[in-house]
Length: 221
Ligand SMILES: [Zn+2]
Image 1 (cartoon, rainbow, N blue to C red):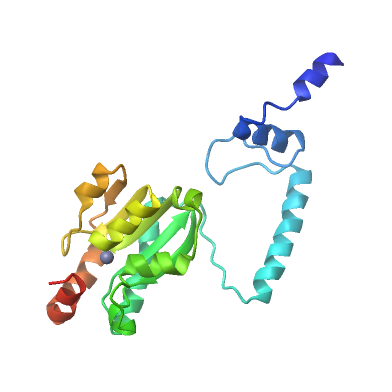
Image 2: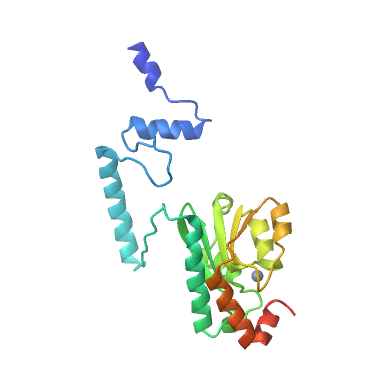
């Protein structure tokens, strides 16, 4: 009996992650022994709990007419660049500069945007700024586990926003048409990945050829 009591005692509150997993297991909510993101085993009690919670969330989302998308978490994270690229295309179709951006937290896109300097007559709406603005106010801890995607290497302004909010990782489509302060951003501890993506490169180089003045204005030249 005493042994059982000891076994079921929770770890100290200070060790939250241990305590949390212990609780999930003890309550038969979730089996997290498999260390792959997005892959957990749901025992019957946890599964019906999940079903109820999802139906409440679904009701709330449907009421507000949210449009849903599903991204299986096993898709390699670089693939989110396809969404930034979609944003770049949207911008081009609106007569703007074709640069797109998304911000991802825990495998979910929480904000997306594209360069709208032309469309909005804006001095600051680069793709990354539009994306961060559309993501709304996030907490420090949310920024700190986010990844920012941009089809083009972020400029001084957008890199500044990355540093300000402590965004730890930036994935860049290409830096052939323009290169921002990547090395400086790295020196401040940010992981910077350049994909050298053909699609991102072509849409931008075509645009620069067609509308060099708009482009030079965008980068302050
Ligand atoms: Zn910028």
